[in-house]
Image (cartoon, rainbow, N blue to C red; front, side, top):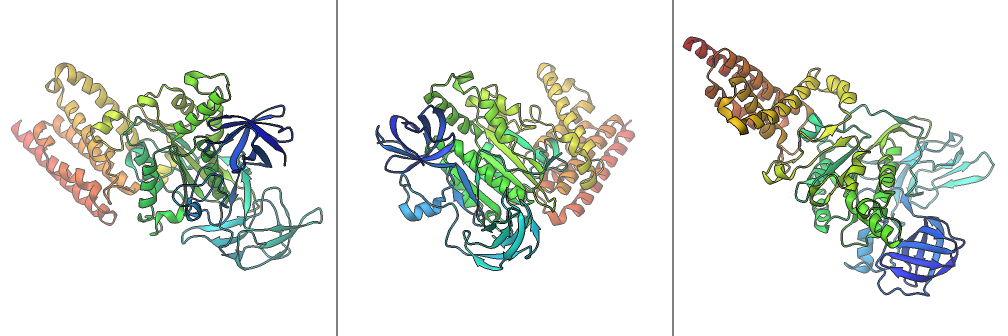
Length: 591
């Protein structure tokens, strides 16, 4: 430990002298209040510290003491269902200690030191183990089995291991290392947040992260282990998209980071998640969720830490062999914190005042996502999917944070204010969004949904693009100038937009759509398009085709419960074919 003195205070930045023996990224305690900070720049014996708490009232001459360790998170049983701040202090424990206003300098362990967990060994005395091997399990919640792993850099032969109730700090296993020394293992690990957790191998993404959101799963899928960005202006539904993904994504664990967003949005998550039932497990969604809240009224420097805290916790569960979905809402607020600290450090600004290293910092965050083979002899596979919201000022995606993000991510869900204002949600613009995972996921869709599903998706995208071209013609010369086949195309696209892409997040049936239901609903819409086009060519009346009663049944299909889908699909398809055959016969008679 070394001790220096404050020589300058500038908002969240504190400069201290006499810090020759400190290192970059060391955690320090600032002033007599013991505020938590992190060294972000060293110049000789002068250290620049970003303080994660309010610095009002600090003055020159007060002590700055380094802990000699980087900013780290505690990993072990007790993470699930907990809500942390940006530097992994549990908010419930802080509330119990200090009330509704967090006291500066408060020091609370991230994991409860008193609670006992039921540890079940997975190895026995005499077994050789290496880093990443699972030595035992703890049933953390009804749905999450917490796998206790050998820490990185540790290996040896198990000398003793016990079954029973232990706190996270008590020894559950002892190893004899190759050096001959005895190593005691507890259920608690620590890991520096700015360093990605190691793994054996990174794999190519091969399966989609099913979200139950039709526009995402069908048109712009994200792979398990993939990265996506959701940029959009104020009020376009970024947070609701993130909430929907957190609620329904096909992931074992969800890590939700509220980084610089409004406090009421985190309150929504806290209120909703315990009440929502996970369709896979039948349990509350909180039973597999970790929340990190660093809202807009919290110290700006802690936003920077919150992103890294969240992804380190997500990597830990990935290493257990779980599929993890990480939501960061929003990376723009994190970038604004970077910009503020960079300005106070008097660094040369880049575009729009952001630091020149903005792109590399974003890349270092998103590159920690992926599908990997974890350390350990069993070769288990885990996936970490990262979805970051971006809040460009005025919805202008040409600004630096959006552009830097788009250079890194492979899925772009472009939220459109025009769609949002017309009450079309999710307001993902189908002409501007894209997914670079589509080709790689085609085989999974063919094997697990239907061999013709990728063709249906391609046809749907083609129809929507043709609709945009036809709408330009309609604006010039009017709809009556179009041929019957083109007018039917517009009607089919209207069905795709209003019945398929539009989804009600607050309707208990429509909020989540299985892949089977997505395939059948899209199949009904395309069947209407194909059969109507053929009927129009055979002379059927266009107005009669548009006003078919079966179109209402197709539109209501998305509100049919899962158990009745297959029968409803058969009934509607039969009615559709019969109705159009009747019109075709009528058209031939008229001829």
